[in-house]
Image (cartoon, rainbow over all chains, first blue to last red; front, top):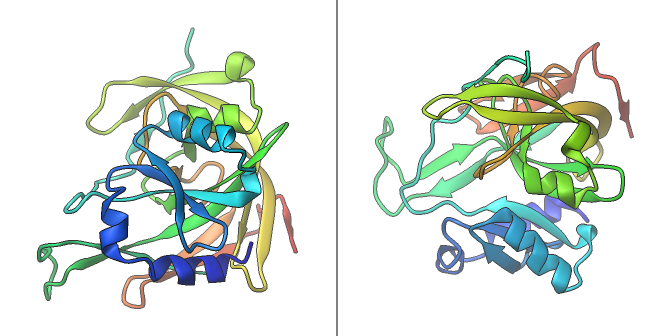
Length: 84
Length: 152
């Protein structure tokens, strides 16, 4: 898989096509030209891919943002060991 | 290694200086390898995160059994505390051209949906000096002296 080509190809996919998968985890084909499957739930997406016979080298998983969905990420704070 | 930001498009003008419809994000593809499989996913470089975390289904996908994993209670801003399971995996990034880095790393697995896995300090940014260029919408990752893996 050539990641640079993958990224270049993925950028060519029309926003209208991406909009169908807004809010989902999707599996991009290795060449980045199409979406193989999508689901709002990652476990379900992985199951779909497994049932369809895809190998781990066949896809890259990525999230498709909903329109006007923005995030304040990070902020993971160190906690305590459970059971202590 | 140069990582170009990935644009996120908005149908309406964004509250950015100068306006615009695009918000770029520092997203990098990471291959995570476990005992029986690997998995390639886009992740968010997040200097504000203490840990590098993935969703739990990723652990199943790569053959990791989290039953014996170290578990810690973690707090995420705006959420209730939750249990995060930690395990050692192999991480790999590449620019697809000339630089590939692979290293053993301890990462967390969280029991809820993440839009994208977070590449925080522990497991990722502790091993790379990250130089964010907001103007050029790119970040440069340089392995530092603590990088425990190999470059190919």
